[in-house]
Picture 1 (tube, rainbow, N blue to C red):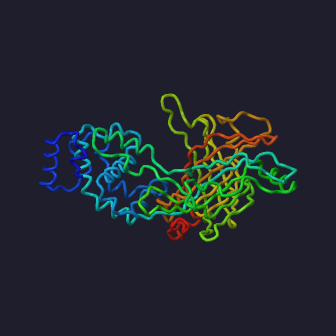
Picture 2 (cartoon, rainbow, N blue to C red):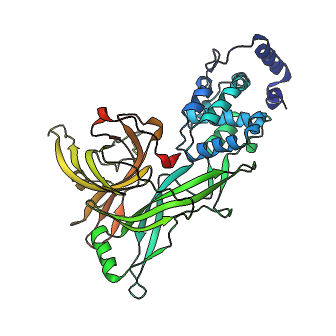
Picture 3 (tube, rainbow, N blue to C red):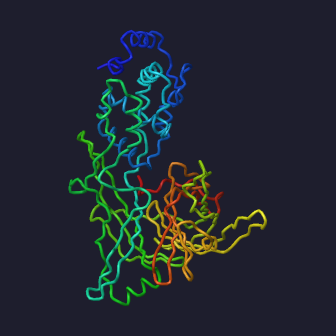
Length: 445
């Protein structure tokens, strides 16, 4: 099947003219078309593939699938789907403005076939981590004195979700819109991968622990007094793309730790290690960490992150195995009348091979925070769920990607939290000039 048959809706005469022009002139592929007005016209497919972050679960699964099944790149319908996906990663939700007209669309897709060898080379040489981590927060239920059991009332993942499928709904919808009116079978492209566990069953290997802890009354009391009713977990998984041509991804839990976290201490409560695939490795965070929260500009009078407190914190972390404690200062913003200042904060963190969870106590959290009611005697903490942005690590900085929530603990133990909001920041060595450029954490390779 030829590209002209894909776009038969434009008319055979137009197709013949365009294809003859392409074949006769043999132009070098140029992403910016002189007659193009749509957003897709400026998308450089080669650069889009080169810079596509492998921290995205779907992108990782797709590239692994192509690597395992290289012949799919010769399938023109598959390739058109791949081009549509790469375009969608660059133009976001603005797919209705991808092309100004049908001629521009046909011209773009026709030219896109000229960079097929370059895309194949990029996908083959891409460094794709096959291990990733998921952070969980666990809210406990009432302690059962009869059975010495502490049930988990709610287990929720933060950041990267792990469900029964890995997909890209926005990219699929974008492709449908861009290819509407053509003969391209958009559904033939793997817009989703079914997740199977280690035994091959179609279900995600989610939280690897049982749903309760066996604790004596004294241990449970200590746990509540020091950490409250919320525990945390970092779980490492290994992903394997199916090589039989089916759209399946095998995900296997390899390492995990369940811990209690306060602003001054962290204690491991339980661990899990795969019998053969376990690769225990801890991210080195014995350095300075800067965390910032920024309120996005309001749009049409509404700010989706209006609950975000201002926070500009720099802490120094001292690490011992998976545990770390932090001391530092927070910059208090001025009000326009009063000047800003600095205040001391404390925190603690637990780390995985590339991720960390940190809890901080900071004066800024005592002010008005939308979503939390003022409760006399309540404590507030900032819980940060972060991971290293290994695509942009340099000798002097390791940027982080992550989310944070403000947690309020009332005197009676009642918990309330804000919705997660994005944070920015980076780890910086204490003596950056004396440090060699760090490698990507080995557990991600």
